[in-house]
Image 1 (cartoon, rainbow, N blue to C red):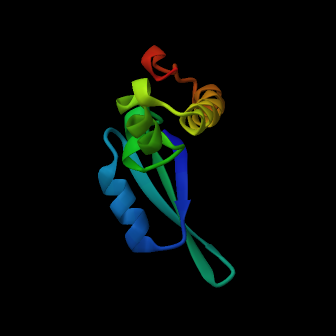
Image 2: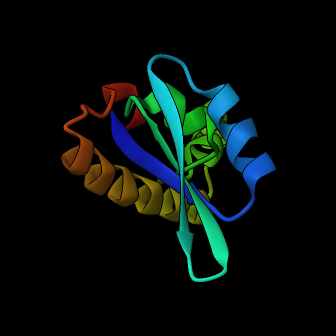
Image 3: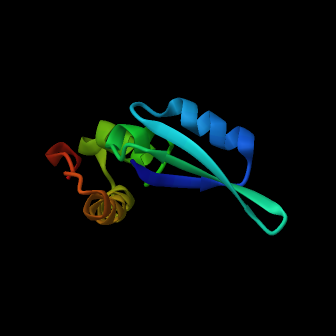
Length: 100
């Protein structure tokens, strides 16, 4: 399991935890007067998508209209792929070829 995200609100953290598939755990820690909620889970593209992370929702929309891309769409795609490349290295994931 990996630390997937950190939340400042318990309800938001619990909602995010409920979206994950596979092993998951929500851990809290106090920092001065604030409580921070760390969400641990399996680092998969599906879990990141469900958590609305790394532009995966935008990528899904872009790929659905790939044949009508404008220059701004191409730039958005390139930016998302750059981010996903970093995420893939960090979590040892492969980027699906149809996303590229």
